[in-house]
Image 1: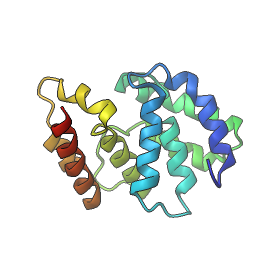
Image 2: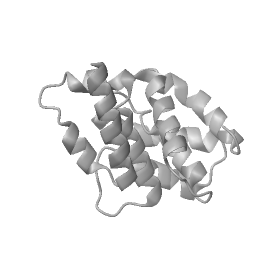
Image 3: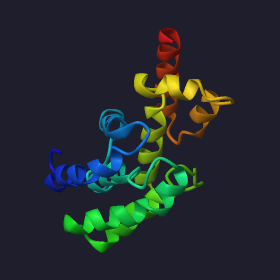
Image 4: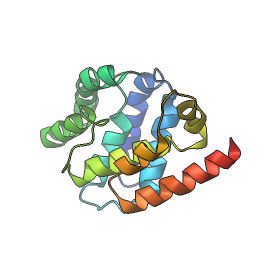
Length: 164
């Protein structure tokens, strides 16, 4: 994982947990890809953002499990890779609320949130969400933090709607 060798190890450790989710490891890879390609992540928070993305769904498929079990799993995995307590707390805090939309979250959370939401517009996930009763794509777009995320979402929505 580029400049941060611990992240590759972290991803390998997280795989057994991620495989149990609805979209599996593919979702996490998609969220990582979106974050790297669509956001200018400052070097000061890059490892924090990427570690949080890797671990954000380790708790299970349900939001409840992700919030309850995810931070414990993440803390354990981060400790094995030698992460500082401060980073462990930040990662766990973001995992504990990553489906919520706090009013004034830190930049790292905004990148995680928007990348995770944009993954819903991917070819792999679009049909699943479109088939859910009362799912509202406009609400997802409105919930995004960054204006450029909203533009990306609209373009992805148009492309996937044509494909469907």
